[in-house]
Amino acid sequence: MQTGRVLSYGVLALPLSFAALPIYVHVPRFYEQVTGLDLAMLGGLLLIARLFDAFTDPWLGWLADRYSRPRMIAWALLPFTVGFVALLNPMLSHPALWLLGALLLTYLGFSAATVAYQAHGAGMTESPRVRTRLTAAREGFGLVGVLLAATLPTVLATDLSIGTARLSWVLIALLVPAAAWFFLQVQSAAVSGPIVQASPAPLLPSLQRVLNDGAFRRLLAVFLLSGIASALPATLFLFFVADVLLNEPVSGPLLGLYFLAGALSLPVWVALAGRWGRVRAWLLAMVLSVVAFAGAGLLGAGDVALFAVICVMSGLALGADLALPAAMAADLGERQKLSGACFGVWNFAAKLNLALAAGLALPLLALLSYVPGSGEGLPALRFAYAALPLVFKTLAAALLWRWRHDLETQP
Image 1 (cartoon, rainbow, N blue to C red):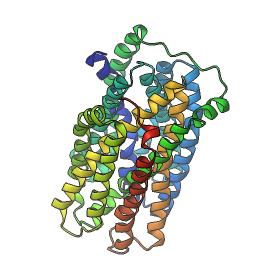
Image 2 (cartoon, rainbow, N blue to C red; image 1 turned 90 degrees about the vertical axis):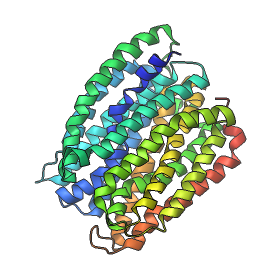
Image 3 (cartoon, rainbow, N blue to C red; image 1 turned 135 degrees about the horizontal axis):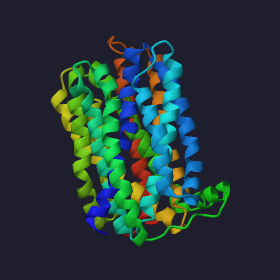
Image 4 (tube, rainbow, N blue to C red; image 1 turned 120 degrees about the vertical axis):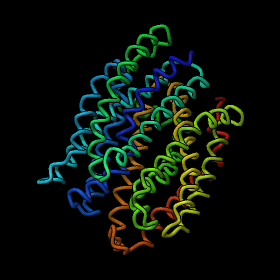
């Protein structure tokens, strides 16, 4: 497949990624500072919204197997955009209801677009190697979007809250040209590519077929454990920088460093997957993450340079986490001609990770007397930011190694 077609597929991930990790990095602290919502309330609202979002994904995946995926993407972009703008421009008189409503609208549009988008990519080729390239392009553009969303608030205004609010208008400026390129290039080029037939199976039988695949269930279990390990520090990043390192102004550059390392590492992980296999390449990334988490737990006030090294290490591992397991899932879903249902379940798992990270970690920190900006409860923050992810990532690596023969396919 020509590089231009691969890139024109991947570009839509750039604006879509604004609603992925950035929400879990920026929104908790943004709403805590701007609206005064406490951590327990924020965690509960994020958990409710994410659980609703997660449970709609299998249904959206089923729709993506039955109807036009490009058309589904086009319709989904409207609620995604409206919800995101509302999310970062809250109504101060009813912040909790506003946050919940904006999250539900954003997630509905984001999920519908993402599931159809991933399934569309899986159906563009029969080659596992090309699927890895398409996945890497999608995740590469996604990481560029995450990089922009993470760093732009500090560029758009000296006040982080004002800069975060202005991020919503940047989304529109990026979404319009990216969507135009995607629909003009990829949709027209797909006419000459493989045609993916819609699945005639009802929703529950489609999901049952996907989950009856033993290899997919094992991959999903590893992905869940690994994803929780990544979601916890993403949710708590700004709190850790502000209250443990005591240097909130460097949060933007450090986030940028993390996501830049992830974006630059993608071609390396694709090459390593081609040489060693996806499982062994992903396992190497997990080991790198474990080392990074162990180091983060030892940091204190002023250790910005050491934390920058940890951001690079964990960012490098992020590239593998984004590209390799999703490509493996694409192969398994396309094998059953149920890519939409497969990615519906896959995204359900990904969002469950984020829901558990925010919905459990934030109330737990509040219960353990952590108060942002007060200097109280810092051992609890260190534990949730570094020790818990280390445990989850180690378990994921152990299971991946145990099931390596079931999961490895030729990339």
